[in-house]
Image 1 (cartoon, one colour):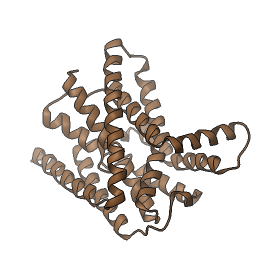
Image 2 (cartoon, one colour):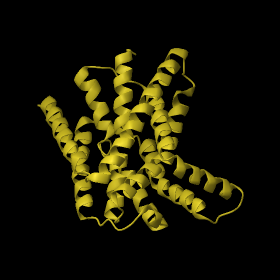
Image 3 (cartoon, one colour):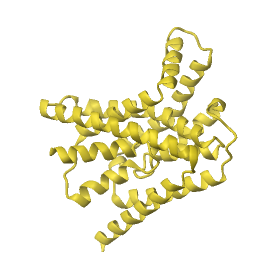
Length: 270
């Protein structure tokens, strides 16, 4: 794969993985507008690894608490805030894993990957984010997270299996609707991404493990490093931005992107 294409794919995936703007919408745009071939599963796995590394580093204090909680559970101890956080993340991940497995077994995951579906999801769920951000209160913090909210956010996260929805966007939407402050909503959404990315990355990794070759492995390492840097920068940008303004800039961008994808999609159909 040309280095420029590899760089563009990794940067786009790294930036859009955590911003509430839909990474799938951007990854569809790039090859179609530039006439580039599909990047393949190896690069998909690599950029997932890179973005996972970014979120682990950025939220390293929370990650340390989660690991402590998992260690305590493995030791038979089920008390303490660290254990509670780990359990809530497990609970929040269950819906998307069940829904994802069901879609895959039914063969519906590939059917959803159309430009038209991505366009409508980008537009509609961008407006839903705007609605939740405008109407949701800002009285609750991440410390108020409870099993009911974790499961509700997990159900919303399962909607992100529709390409164009944006996993971070839909979980932030759910958290804002539940009354969490903007920075806390984003923080919970990012923490929920950790087990989800691990699960999806593992599944993709198993698919490509038997066919891995050295050139592809080299490209994967380059893509992972680029995606890591891009995702870390995007996380820093988003968390700083929402401390000062609302999610409206992201919503406006989603509306523009969604309309552009719709125009492109229906233009081709005509």
